[in-house]
Image (cartoon, rainbow, N blue to C red):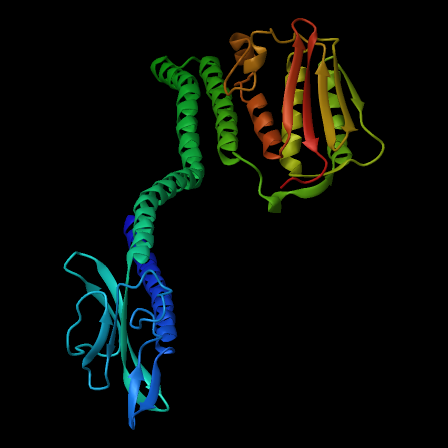
Length: 407
């Protein structure tokens, strides 16, 4: 990028030099032609002669109108010097008509033009005029200074912009890498205990003598089966968290009726409430509530909240599920009058593998991933999940989802 900027600065400077020189030559040619227009070519005593009396600098009857002329010279058609103003001139014209850049012995740069003067299709002489290039050199010095300062500044800005954009481009890769690290750490941490239990039961079964009725071996095999099921659930949850990170792609979203989605879920949990001696109260709107969502994922999030409510509500308690709309959002609430969550634990309940009561969670088969999964699903739908709780009195979980698609 630095090389490109240097080349670009060189091209810009070259174009500026040509542009400045073109403008300077135009002005110098304009002045020279104005001077040449004052030359008189007339018949005198039977001979044609050139009269320079009215020519600025070369004549004696006019004040010079230009103060930036270093010298002016008049040569006859044969190139012999006739008259001059300023620096001493060579006796013979030694340059071709046109523009030349000259450096004097005093290190002064001049721009010289040699102009053939023609009247009545007859060459009557050559006018040579020179002007200092001070203005054009000052402009070019300013341009060089601007480019000298501008290239490093531009390179710095490009570097910072590239660093920022590179960071944005690397975010998905970094997120995938962090997901892999987290998945590996979580899996190794949570699978260590059940794998040790499976190994222990298998080793004891191999070392113990076979009893006649085989009850001990059967018990150990049942333990292995239960632990394996638990490990399977854990692995499924971890894979779910790893695969559904970030926002959902618009192509996976469907226009669904939230009420129709939840009615089968309410019927299923009504049956479960009867077996656990709980009351499930559902307040679902009569009118459809339409939104863009992945129905399976959204159902999974609500299922996780209902599972938590049923798990931590004592026999005889109540679980409520209600849906209502507010502005451009739909609100899904799951409320229970169970054991509640201590205030110190409430800010951490959506963290992976966080358990308010680790012993009780283990006994109920929980891994501390249900709320993390629910939160990830809701955030993937551009929504928000919050929790309120009074310890010993119950908890309320609320999901807010946009009714209109923000994808």
